[in-house]
Length: 69
Image (cartoon, rainbow, N blue to C red; front, side):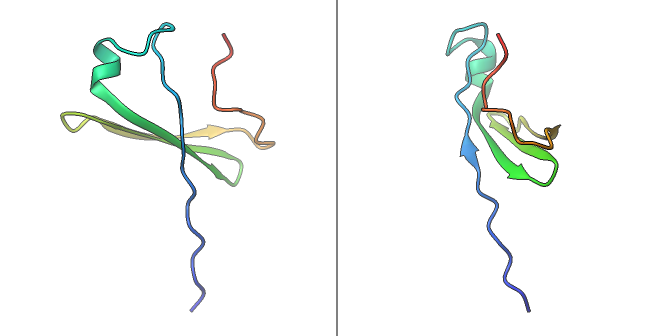
């Protein structure tokens, strides 16, 4: 059986409207991204069961983890 490679998650530095805290900042505790085929897998963990996962298409992996503004 072939050994599976690990999914390397890198922590994202979250800020909401340029501020670290606030309602969304308190509800969202951690966000990570992992380089996968065709883009990025983004995982968010939060309080009170709030969590999510999304795929960000970026075939060239140009996204540096920050926003455009």
